[in-house]
Image (cartoon, rainbow, N blue to C red; front, side, top):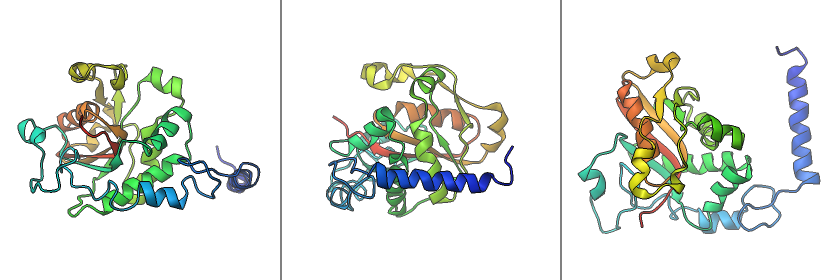
Length: 255
């Protein structure tokens, strides 16, 4: 229960954290390591993730895989051949060096201060979409219990929180459940990844009434094969969602 003095204590603690961060523990650029006031210095931002370095790349509207600049199609051949459960994907940049370090440091280094930056970059990419249809709610990809206990946080949720504020869209972090712990997709052979995610997600009964006729935005850090977000999108569609958009910070280019 919050007391009358709690807001002042919260403000004082926030001020102390900021002072410690800027005085005793000066910030370093997450990519080049030079001292700077932000988590990413201006030169790295301009060189690696400035406009034209991923956000404006010609991509498939449905899965966000890169398309050749000479292609006029809106969808890639894979999506035309076998349409996924989700309807659109927006990504901030390709998952490639050196910017992949931003996600690796967040996910495996617990550098949570990177989450607002990644949400900002994803928001910029969303704003650059010519025909952006805003979802009615955001749902981060949930982690399994063992993975959450091991890591201590869900990187998708950490990104979804500031993104929801920027988009002014309600965040529903408990909408989806990971009902079956699965192996990390990166450790699974490509031909086994779809089966690894089979029946892994379910919609929480207390939130199922939100989905009929709803446009859901699924938030994640990295999209590689797309099987994870596709499985969650299928669960949302099965519960009545009419549209699912994937909002992912980085997209692994096809090999």
